[in-house]
Amino acid sequence: MTEWWKKGTVYQIYPRSFMDANGDGVGDIRGIIQKLDYLEDLGIDIVWLSPVYDSPNDDNGYDIRDYQKIMAEFGTMEDFDEMLEQMHARGMKLMMDLVVNHTSDEHGWFSSKPEYYIWRGKPNNWKSFFSGSAWEFDEQRQQYYLHLFSKKQPDLNWENPDLRESVYGMMRWWLDKGVDGFRMDVINLISKDPELPDAPDGDGGPYYMNGPKIHDYLQEMNREVLAEYDIVTVGEMPGASVADAVNYTDPERRELNMIFTFEHMGLDQTGGEKWDLKPLKLTDLKHNMEHWQHALHKKGWNSLYWNNHDQPRIVSRFGDDGKYRIESAKMLAACLHFMQGTPYIYQGEEIGMTNVRFDSIDEYRDIETLNMYDEKRSGGVPHDTIMRSIYVKGRDNARTPMQWNGDANGGFTTGTPWLGVNPNYKDINTLNKDDGNSIFQFYRKLIRMRKEMEIITHGNFTLLHRDDDSVFAYTREYEDEKLTVYCNFSDREQQFDLPDGELLIGNYNSLESNELLVLRPYETAVFNKKS
Ligand code: NOJ
Image (cartoon, rainbow, N blue to C red; front, side):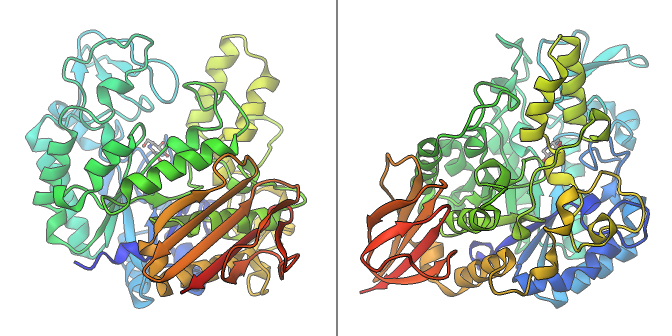
């Protein structure tokens, strides 16, 4: 096993919003096939495909009705096979989304194998991630079932060995088809405290995040399935600490290759809820990422991400989506891509797509957003206050259709898109991708450098200027080489001593001065020194 995923860059496709080939307003697999040359041009090694399985779409495919069937809106299994073949022909790998904490309530198991789910005569006080109680009463059984997400997403009972074997069989079926790995949806939630006790404040997290048997299950899955294939695995893990992350990804423990941490995504909220906004303090982000870089070095492996289908757009969040959109998009890219780990690019990030503001709540589609809106409105929170949070944090920010060109609907569809296109598509789209100064070309260079420079994969990490609240700077060192990365997260000029070495990459055409390092708004400058 070559650990090829340590030098690769992943691109996430959210199929519903990527490219619609048949004009029904919903992205599809044939649309993805049309755009594989685009991904090859970018230099992508691995595609993570959000769920394409048959689903009633209560949560856009994260509620699976049949794990071995393709969602009709997305195409057929023949289309899927062709896509996989075409990816492989371009040297790309395909990582599927594995959603096995829960299924849809329309999955056959829910009626034929009730023992695969979690039932109780009385609900406890846990809250669902999507508002309201995490329990729903089932008339037929006269019992409640647990659903940490929507009530159409009942949680699976991993205590049951037959359920586990059914999941492993399904995984083998996909791997035997030739897929190259899995991104595992909320996989650290599969082991619940069997007592299912009430939680002091209704947050059951401590009883199901990184639960009592989680490592047994992952080690069993590894033995039964993963170890047999040369694949990549990444676990999505809300509530995992660095210590947990080491346990999940230390190769000797034989669990997963890497995880998605959430800590850096929680720094711009006040308390337990992502909707409670607070401005990011750059020092919090720096210290958090430093902690992860150090803790996993030579012990485990991390994923590097700013964006995915659940997170707002990074230029709008930690950058500037107005005057300095292009500069800040590149600066954020450099800041992340020179760290240790496997970088993930979410569709549209490579062209600097931004958050969206729809006027009416009726234009939103995301179940998390809509349930939260209803709950808060009934609790008396004013409409405008809720909309402010949605504009900053709502998941539909990431899900507006990909902006390919300046034609109607950004070239995404000839029909009516399932979710509105961001009105800025005439200015922000892929048409200028070949321009040497485009954000796309900047990402392309970063992806290539990672393949060519061992230091990016292996070097150790040192944070510079710890307490500076505008500039994120660090070094990477490996053998006789040193990289120094400077990133200005502000629109004000910042001055430092010039680091040693040659300018490797930057987002302004040349340095402002040869005497000092003068960083202009959102400037990044990366220096390379070989002794
Ligand atoms: C995490 C996924 O990324 C998100 O989109 C989904 O709603 C939940 N898990 C439930 O599957």
